Each structure stands twice: as structure tokens, then as C-alpha cells.
Length: 363
Image (tube, rainbow, N blue to C red; front, side):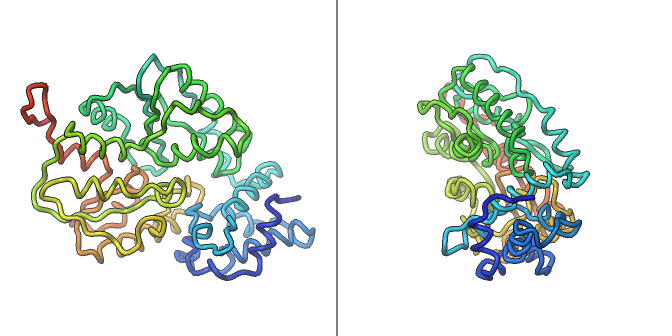
């Protein structure tokens, strides 16, 4: 058994510098789950001095892929890539857990159908949290109200989950199919509800060896498009006097590094006061939303609880976040008197739409 990313593994195995920011370690207080400890074990496996027993496999799948270790590293090493490499080997060696195998099978069955001709193609939002309600239909309504000609895909793209869970070949196959579907619809813009899908289209073609999108096609997040609609007066927000804070999800914060649109949107709504959290942007604490359902739910629940407590330190009783998964996780951890909304949930409740005559009308 050989786990790739040997250089990173060897650099990380004796380094403690990111130990205190590891999300899974923060939740469990278990040393063996930290990047340093996992790097040491991976190094021993590569040298034939250790085997991947059940505890080793569990630790690898309990990594939440939040990428805090990558962001914190002064040397620029990316231990999250080592986790993906280990998962690829475990899958090949039939060591993947039953939970992961079931999840991979479900993901591989998701097939995006060809879309009709459209100016903008919206990728349906993927979710893995049982209580999460995808924002796809709400996003289509908002974009059309803002004057965009848009169609949504029939199902979410499974590419990112397949990649993070270690099924590289399936991820590459689905990514190539997705790119072909985007090309065939003739769109000029791909809109993504889930920020992770922006990472898929921008970064994964080079990593997985597939075709890339033609350069004229732009990839934009829903938050960015909504902010543009606000600035161009296509949508008119309105809300009573309330204070909101926000949670930057893992993908916005540490995969695509686009976190300014969300607080800017909040700041553009009259009557709404924005209470910025201490941990935000690329240093936003994880709620476990990037774990894709393979991390033990006790760990994810503890992370969501820690994150809610941090956000409530702003004294806001209303929280908004970009993804349905994060909203569901934070809702499950929040006190009964705290409101958690997705981006579309907030916008649909706060916006007035302008009709052709210029009058403001409720949706």
C-alpha cells in the first residue's frame, strides 16, 4: 500500500503548527486525528512499518476537509490532499467504510441531463445533511426576478463529494460530463448555489485531467449575482430593524476564498444591522459542512455547536449562511430563539421586487 503526496506527508509528520486549528481535533480532543499524527501514520504505512487498521481508517474519514490546516500552514503544505490520497488508496484496497461505499454509490447514480439553450445555467445545490433543504428553486426565482434568463440542472453535481471521498475516477467522469452539458446549453455564465461547485469548475479539471470550461464562460456564485442585482437596483431589499451575523462556509472561506459578497449583501438591506463574527473569511470556524457525510455525526454536531456559540458572541439572534447543509447543521445546534437562514431564505423574505412600471411589489 502506498499513499501518494509523500513529500507533504513527510513534511507534516513531525510538525505541530496546525494541530490547534484542526476542526476534528477541536471537536474530539483526540491527538491521533490531527494532521501531524495522521501524517506520521501515513509515513509509517508508506514505509511498510504500519498497517491501515480500523482506527487509522476511521481517523482518515473523520477529517472534515475544512482546510484549516492548509490555510494555517506557514510552509504552504496542503495536508487535506493527503487525506484525499489516503481515501483513494483505502477505496482501492477495499478498506473504505460501509457508510462511504453507500454514499459513493448514491453519488455515482446522479446524472445531469442535457439542459436547453439558456444564457445562464444554475447548478442545483448538493446537500448531504438529512434536514437540509436545497435552495435551487428559490435561487431560480430570485435570479429570474433580477432579470436573468436561467435554467437549473435537474440534479446536483456529485463531483466534489466523489473527489473528497476518494473516488477519483468517478469524479473525473462526472466532471467531464458536466463540462460537456455546460458547453451544449450555450450559456455564458454558470451560476452556483454551492460555492464548492465553483471550486469544481475552476480547479478540478487540472487536478483530474479533464477538459476545462472555455474561457468565455464565467463561473459566479449566487451571492455575487445577488449583490450585482442589488447594486443595479434590480432587486429592492427591505427589512425591519434586526441584527444579523453570518457564517462563512468551508468552501467559500478556504476553497474559493470569496467571502465578501455575503456581508455586503446584508449591509445593503435597509434596517438590517450586520454584526461581524470574530472568526470570518478564510479563518471562519468550520461547522462540519464540508465533511460530505463520512465524518461521525457526533463530531459534526460538536463543531456546529461550537460555531453557534462563537456566532452568538456577536449578540445577534439571527444567522445567515450560504449553504443548506450549514444552515441545517447550525439550526440543529442553535437555541430555540435563534433564527438560522440560508442565503435564499433571507433574500426571499427581505426583498421587494420591482415590476416593469418601477413600482415595488411583494413577490
